[in-house]
Structure formats: C-alpha cells, structure tokens
Length: 268
Image 1 (tube, rainbow, N blue to C red):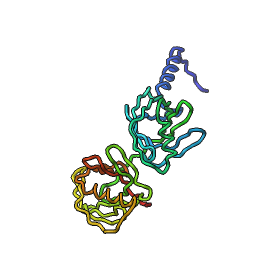
Image 2: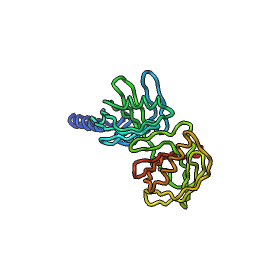
Image 3: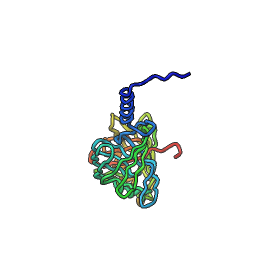
Image 4: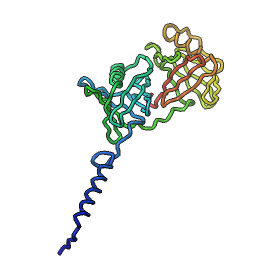
C-alpha cells in the first residue's frame, strides 16, 4: 500500500514559486531552446512583400553589429547604422552602397526598400525575421562560417571596376571575359578581355605588385577593348592592395581605382 508523506503548505508554496521563477528565467521557446542575439552574421533566405515571396541570391547576407550593419543585397554591398531597442526592434538608417547593375535587381530593390526604418525582430532557434510596419518580412538563418578563397591558385573573374568608393559592373558584353590566376610561384596568367597575358607578381602581405605584362596582340574593340585597356593600366600602376572576403577579391591602387573579382567554383 503506498505511503503518502505530508508536505507542509508553506513548503508546497515555496516549491511552486521556485518552479515559476525557473520558467521565467528561460530564454527560448517552449522546449527551452536558446534564442539568438540579433548581433551576428545572417544569411538572407527570402523576402515577403506585396503578397509575394522573393527568394534570395546565395550571397545576400547581413553582418549585424551593435551599431553598424554591413551586408550584401545579393550583388551590391552596403552599410547602415543600427539602433536597437533591446532584442525586439531595430531602427535602420541606410548608408553607402555600390551601384552595380545586377542580374536580380528585383530582389535587390525590394531588399533595400525593406531594410530601413523601424523593424520588429522575431527570433527563433538559429533564425531571425525582421518585420516592417506593413507586415513585410526579411527571413534569415544563421550564416555558416565562410572561408576566404586563397589569393593564389584561384581563378578570379573580373566583375566590376572600382573608382574611389564606387563600383560599376563591367558592361554586359564584356562580362566573364577578363580572368586571371596567380600560381603558387606568383606567376600570373589569364585573359584581359580578348588577349591572353602573363606576368610575374610580387606579394608582400596584403600588397600585390604586377611586373611587366606580356600579351597576345589581337585588336580588341568596343566594351571588351575598353575593359582590357583599363586592366592593363591598373596592373601596371604599381602596388595594389589585395583584400579577399569569401569568394570576392578586391584589388585597389593608391589612387582609389581597382577591381573586384569573383572566385570560380568547382562547377564553373
């Protein structure tokens, strides 16, 4: 026969209070999962706006800091100032952005329109959703760590030309025509637009200096020819500051002119 032990009323009340406090102290959902801090790196999955869902390009992301945000709309990079109201809301003030003509401008334009002003924050395990006053959303998931592509052994395809703080995509007829690879012994080979070239590079920390270029001598006209002349001038201008972020390489000269290039994937 079971034995029941008497528990004083005061002890029972204390137990209820302890359990209630323990429940209030949890950060997470009903299963006790920890909810993420909005500050961090997030991969954008989709937008919902005007009754439609727009799926994000692979490179769309946000790197959210305590006061500043850096991100990519899918092709164009941007910065913004962020002011948080705890973890429930953030006010975003757009800053600078590049102005390249990109393949999915519908998504980029919608993203830029939504990611500004006061946004409500909805947190879930490994997920973050930003909501506008009219109910439009930016859905994100925790971004995996991205390994920078190596400067050497990678085939780089020139995507845009930089002048000061502005980047402009290469003309459509020249897209994908200029590419180069720096071998482990710092021998450079590639295509300037229509002519193949080779050179010897010197790498010193984050600085790359191209030696004299040797190239074929085909006559290159139009946008391809103009791109080739610009790259020839850039490579011969002296030391270039090299910066890799993920699969993107930026080479910048002392006068602010330069290029951005994308690393080829195994599928390419």
